Structures are given as C-alpha cells and as structure tokens.
Image (cartoon, rainbow, N blue to C red; front, side):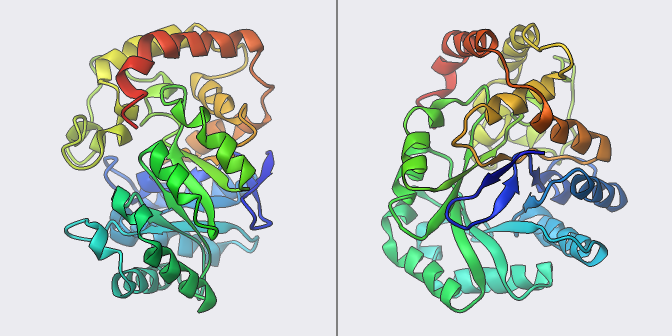
Length: 327
C-alpha cells in the first residue's frame, strides 16, 4: 500500500481508501456481516482511511465503523460528512444550530468524542460564499468536536472557492477516467495551498469495473436505477453523469488498454494514482474480494505513457463533450 499526506494534517493515509456509501444504503441489498468482513479486510490490507456520511443508511455506515473500532486495535481515520440531512437542502440550513446538531449525531453514531475529519456534504454553491459557515467549523475545531474539516463538492468551481478558506484541509471531488476536468486547474491550486484531494466515485458507480452490459439491471433502491437523470440528486453522482449505454461503449474502448496483470478496476484506480496531487481514491466495496482487488491497485506498476495518452484521447473524443463543462 502507498501512503500519501492529507493536506496539512500530518496524516499519512492509504492511497486506496474505503468509501462506505455502498454499505450504508442506496446501492441495493447489503448485509452487515459481509460489510464488516469487507471493513476488516481493508484494515488487513493497509487501508487506514474510511469515508462515510451521516446520511449513508441514515447513519448506518457510521455505526458500522464504530463497531470496527471496537473490534480492532490499530488506529485508522474516519471522515464523515454533514449537511444532507437538511430538508429542504438549502444554504440557509448550514447554520450553527444545524451543523452542531449534525456533528453531535455523528459523534454518537461513531461512539467517539472527536470526529477526525468533517466534510460539508455537497452543499449548495452559495455556501462557499458564506464565510460564517466556515467560522462555525473553526469553532467546532476549537471546541474539540472535530479535528479537521474539508468539503465534498460537485463542481470544480466550488472546489476552487472552498480552498480560499484557510481551514479547509481536504476537498472530495469526482475524479476518474470519465471525469477529468479537476486535473486542469484545481489540482495545481490544491497542491499550491497544501489541500488534500479525495477522489470520489473513482469507478463511476461501477461502470469502470467493466462488469456491466446493456442487460445489467439494478434494484429499485439502487441509485443506479433511480438517479440516472438526476431525479434524486446530482446526476453526475451516477455513472459519472454519462448516459449508461453511451458509457458502456466507452468502456469497451478502455478495456482494450488494460495492461497484463491488471483488472479493469485496477487500471481505473491506478490511473487516478498517476496524479501525485491526489491524496487517495475512495472506492466503495460490499465484499472482501472487492476490497482486495481495489487495494492491490496501489501496488501495481505505473501505467505507461502510451496507455495514459490513449486514455486521454478516448476522453477527449468520446466523453468530454458530455461531461466536461457540466461539473
């Protein structure tokens, strides 16, 4: 496993970490026993950073991570998120009373006195123009409720605005072979300001595993079924914003580039790690074997210049017109 520095925290986190959206909910059937086995396997393989949110299974993934801490002795970091419990989800809801309440609820779920890293959970763009919100986060740090804070964003412009606030330690943003715009400007600015980058949706909702076909179906409570056009939340969260069948056509072109000894999943994750500005990729997993496949990507050799160039060409020709200027 590779380890990379996260912002200015002094933490060294695993380059392949673990996103717990899938074990919390909205990804079809999930079983706690299998989820816990996956979490244990991640620790066995050197993963030391787990990303969650208070709305994943209404706090269920936070509670599973609390169980993991009870069952294992080695230290690891937990990043959670706040904001998406707001109904309606509006900028005015990001106030002291609500944010403090969300933090207290996550502290209870996680069975801890201090949250390692709290992230605003894809708030409305207006929030990044409300310095009082970041003052509240600073106060929560001073109170010992959170150690550090960051943001999770939908758009590159939100990321660039967020890192103008000096307390922001990390930005979580969609970055994968089908969503490359963050590398244009944001990565340079994040590096200059020593802000960590957490690459979320690294496998484009599983599209980049290469395991789907036009006949693939998803359960009714899986966002890959109910959010293909942004019905429930931003459509960029589902299949990276690409129409499913169009995405499958791109995958067939990318499949031809997979190096010997790699799976398609591993090529997708290793591609992300080719960018030194990225702190870690946070793929999800429901089963221990998925965790192992993901984690092994960190120890595979770098992708060749020729493969990187061909991936870029496919993106420019077949993907960029559909996604690049939307996020």
